[in-house]
Image (cartoon, rainbow, N blue to C red):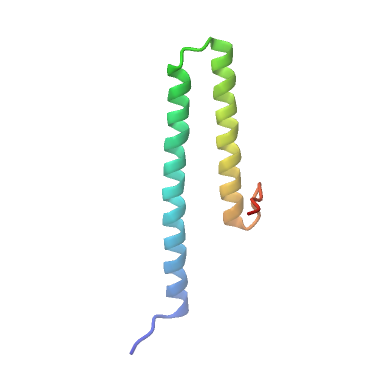
Length: 81
């Protein structure tokens, strides 16, 4: 029986983790783009429309910072369960 080297197993784990992260990014990007689209189609006056878009953009930015910070080991926002 032949076992794969530890470095190869580590590469598989990293590839699996990065695939999950990429899928997570794509799903959340779809959700935020849908939120931008819904805000544009709601028909609210322009100042409120812009404020809502800025809020959604800030939430998306915080989420991305948290995701990339967690990949480095230091998340921006800690969630306690």
